Length: 161
Image (tube, rainbow, N blue to C red; front, side, top):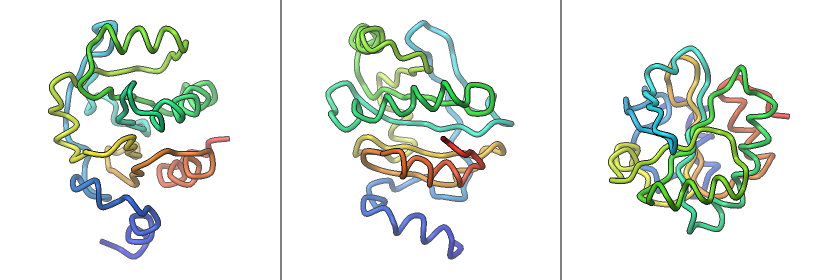
């Protein structure tokens, strides 16, 4: 791991809660469906930076940061992909929550937890920042604010605000 990656990981006090994959490694290949049934395969998104946020409706910090992703999508709809991966909740629960809050970014369902496990996530929210070549450049465990989001987005070449 190079020095800049060490700084990114060590500046996050909860970085140890994400065991794999590591910063600088390729994003794990996965395919999940969103709440409308549309399938998303991560490898099909190469060419654009991607933010993957693991969250749940029962998680207050997760719910608090979702409006940031909505704002980010409004600003960067053409040059950034935002994927909110819900962990092990029913489609009905998630769809109702998304509709009630009027979010319009893709919300994927990891109903069996396999993708969450592949990313080694067991604390929420957890967000991965992937560059346009499909390499993980940063991750953050815990609730993001605008400043933390901007800092992490810079690692994938995005100026958030």
